[in-house]
Length: 81
Image 1: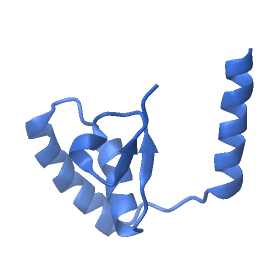
Image 2 (image 1 turned 90 degrees about the horizontal axis):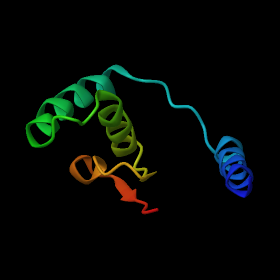
Image 3 (image 1 turned 45 degrees about the vertical axis):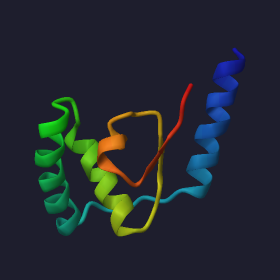
């Protein structure tokens, strides 16, 4: 039960402090190129991850994630469990 409360707290904090960025053409094109390059290193890298990475790059943001694919994609801090 405690894990659920903590998760809700984190989600609420993100929702209250975050904002939605539309997928722009430039980001989509760059993400497609990144996806092709990244899949040469790891076949499991998703296009969605590449879109997130390219969005972060454009807006000078850092992605906080537990997804180790971002070691390849950059612009991220990998959180460990």
